[in-house]
Image 1 (cartoon, rainbow, N blue to C red):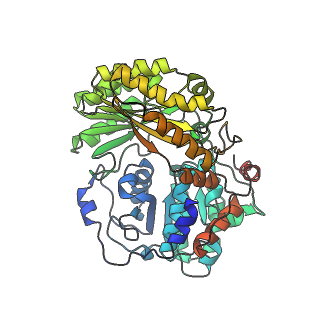
Image 2 (cartoon, rainbow, N blue to C red):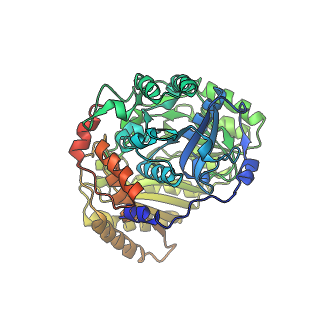
Image 3 (cartoon, one colour):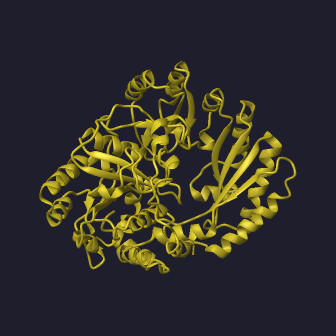
Length: 513
């Protein structure tokens, strides 16, 4: 497994101790709002990826801003390129009594645990209590799906939307900094309905008296809604990200989004405009990224596009559903100099796509991409999944057939990104099988062979690692005991066994859902 290689690589990996500075990165940043300096609690805020990816995640932007505005001396840490010094002041991690991480997906948890180990911090909450080690917490999208993955390592886990519990968290930690009483801190944290304290709430592998909070709460206008900083070193470049909505009305069989974020909720156009007016009046950004599960669902999208075009702002979309793609959306991108779009057909045949919950046909794909090509788009990135329930050899061959048709009909250059279906907790397909690495390799081989028959504008093919897919599946179904074993395996550099069973994890999770 990839996981075993990662664990074994820890034996030879050198800890970064030499002086390195984030100064180059700090100099490139422009803050969209002025934040207070200093604060009364040193708080390390970690994102488990490199700086470019982390700077493109609105979660860390929101948390960093709120902590600073509430008088906390929060500083940002990233996995790379300088893992144990803060971006904000090159402060060593060892100076922080509190460490929290935002975890969006399963691999992020593994990265977080390895990062803690590299810093010399015990992964076991019990072992951390024995020495002068920091309090370790986590939150993020993964807590909506399976927070038990984090439960063997974290002292506390914020369930759901962390923005709703910051005042409570901060009050608890301010008292802790005065009295240094961990037991009192954990007991106080455990009283909040949105905070899971594993050492208190999990008994004999089962979670007691705790629920993931309501996922349908309105998006408060009091909370941040856009980037706290912009930087050309982000993967999106010097782009201001703004969140328009959460939730989804669709119920795609493989997707965690409906179970994670509930029904659709929107920010009003007037509030968004008010914030954009303020930021754009004092910022040199030329591009705005619209963060939504599906941009075309936003009811005032055309009004927002009109506003941004008047401000001469380039526009990019976080996601585009091919059947809802409009001429207005395409021209908004191409007029800003963006001539590539990303869409997700998922499959090559209509019937299998329909079973996934995507109700559009190959004919619609061709029509919409022809429209895009006529408006100046010259490249499209296509996302496909293999290993789906009910998939046949015909479905695999149909992927290259669809690509051939797109090239012939539209003249577009294609980039294919193909990954394996991974069943996740809380989805309609949570009980469906994972096909395994051997089957994934065979399907990849068939797709690669088929694509070689396309001579005109041969598509570029990018394949997700079969071992990484297997690792994602394994981690997605960890219960509490599995998480404890994960921590032990990382600390001892030994291979990790697979999760206990999906049914046992679902039994544990039913107390949280």
